[in-house]
Each structure stands twice: as structure tokens, then as C-alpha cells.
Length: 193
Image (tube, rainbow, N blue to C red; front, side):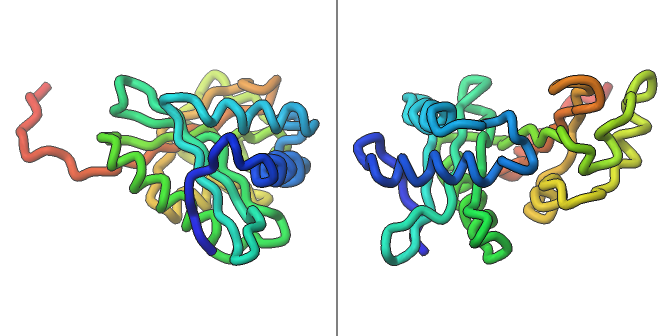
């Protein structure tokens, strides 16, 4: 497997990546990219000037996975969005390799933090399908993975849950926010509060 930049002129690979988005999110988030047109638009947006777009290919050039990120907060923070691995090739280290590669590319560009939102639209966690108000933090502190929600994948890669937005995708369909520091903190003493 090789990971490299996805370029707009790689029409065949762009088409493969769009198909991965449709297939890869069909069960977990079916409204994310329900059509090839939606998926192609997402891939095209990944070619923007403040974006990264990386693809994992096998030795025949077939796309196995794709990851993208966009720069935020003057480049200090990057949002990982999205990550997809061909369902037939999951649990083979492709997603981990793509995230690790993206972290290196973000560090090269001076990024300090990588973050993402992991929607729970189908009650895959204890945060989905319930009213998180009025004590959102108590629900978040007691989160459990019920049906292979990807937040635990990201935790294994060093990401931590930094928040949740209740009802982001409709009642009982929150967005779970995770982040990871990419560089050691400075040796400077921060002021006491």
C-alpha cells in the first residue's frame, strides 16, 4: 500500500474515492454522501488551497482509503474530514496509516492540533437516541460504544473526546468532537489562574 496526494487530474482515482464515500458511509451516516454527485463534490472541495487530500492505493493503483483535512485557526488547528476505508479492506491498518500520514503532513505545515467530529446518527453510542440536556457533560463522561462507532478507533490513535454537540443532526443525533495534540507543549510556564 502507498499513500500519496490525491490530485484533481487523477480522474479515475477521484471517481474511486467518491464511490468509497458513498459505500463507506451508507450504513453509519447515510445522509453524508448519498449520491455519487455529493461524493464527487466533497472530493473536489478537498483540492482547495488550505486542504490536504491523501489516498491509500494498493499496488495496482486501486483506492483503498482516503483522508482529507482543512486548515483552521490560522493553521494551528486542522479538521480531519473525512476518513473512509473501503469496507472490504477495513481492520487491516489502512485507516490508522492514513491518520498517521495526515498527522505528519499537518505537523509539516505547523499544525498543533488535529480535530474531528464523529456523528452518531444511528444510536451507536450511549449519546445517540437520547436527550443529552440538561446535563450534557454527565452523558459525555459516561459514553460507551454500543455498535462499532468510530470514536474508539480515534481514541486508540491518541485522540481524546473534547466535547459533544447535542442534536447536531436532529434530535438524539449528536456530533462527538475528538482532538489530538500533534507536537509537545512548549517548555514555557503558563500563567496560573
